[in-house]
Length: 84
Image 1 (cartoon, rainbow, N blue to C red):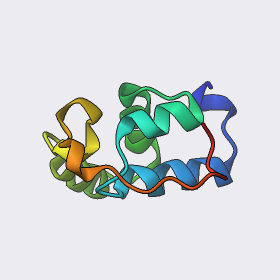
Image 2 (image 1 turned 120 degrees about the horizontal axis):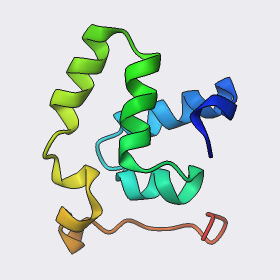
Image 3 (image 1 turned 60 degrees about the horizontal axis):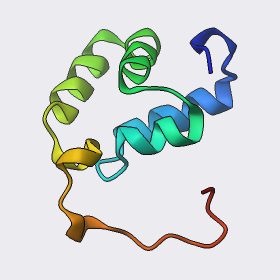
């Protein structure tokens, strides 16, 4: 999915997921096809400078945002209705 072709409702959902502590970038990529670098670019383009810096500080190095760093104990219930 190209950043230029995303509708506002989808952008809002991606931003919401990016701010959530327990939603890894892998989940955003799975659902929307955006890699971590694409999410960063979207956030940089959409948020104010202050909000973007606050978000980057918050997610940088956070284990819950990166699937490979997550502890397997953080696995969550997944509904049968959920994609994948």
